[in-house]
Image (tube, rainbow, N blue to C red; front, side, top):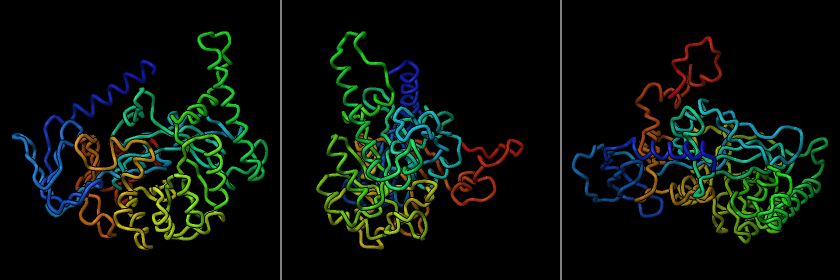
Length: 431
């Protein structure tokens, strides 16, 4: 890890740990831990960015700040496994696979989409590039903290590297004029060719050992694919049609990489195959028609079919395809078509955390985990419920009672300040 990145990581950790010096006890709330039974009236105790205790009876330290949350619901911060917030960019038109491209280098953290996601209760997200390529770049895992630079939002792996996966796609999106593939079969062939090259590249590096003269010329794209092959990066794969889904499963088995199916519109037609492969699916439920022809079978029933098959199911916004402010609706729509309430809430929180390999930090309310949570006015999946507050690392990043924050939740003049010109009043630029 380079010195600048190491310093940035230490700064983020210091900020999270040092900002909340006084313990805060949220009392009397209906608590949804996700990894355990719900608590009708309990206390959530947080300190220095972490959850200290949760339960019906919690010893509150003297000097702790007490917040009466009676009549409200507290649940873990929501996890969005697929977002394009922050005006993110990825690969260009020069090649169909560009694994060396990093979304990290293109995210605008001052974009109003970040505040709108906070208003929707989203605390953790996988920001990734588009689906017009077979591989459009490396994704970036972030927390929607209030930050002025991307470094303040980043999450890090145990080795100090920036956490993220890689974005791939198949189907119609990546089929274009050369050098892009013209058919589905050619799409899969190009992917195979590049992964074989990555295998050969890794073998040459291993064979060279400490002899720099024998090492191949450095290739950033093959390095990134090598991280996929050894399991350091998860592939987040845009796919819709049932045959495209099976192609993804085939490639994952062939090269041994870990994959999360993204969208998977036809997943209910191949639910057993997905379950047998042990592959999770992050789905998007739409309540209005339109979009591409290969997604014509998208249906609320997909969630129920995957749940019945035993597939790990998460949800995503694909922001701005659906609005981050309304993310909880994904779970509500799934329940409408037969998914269990428990499964829907798990899908909005812990399932996404597992897909991003962040389950030790986020996704549930448990002692030792990051103090990322949402305070709601009522039942999470009711259309009448509002996100009142969003907290990340023990710091409140959204407060509906604050007029500036409420603007992001409800919309109106200034809510999309990034779309205005420099001549306009900049007072509404966000946090």
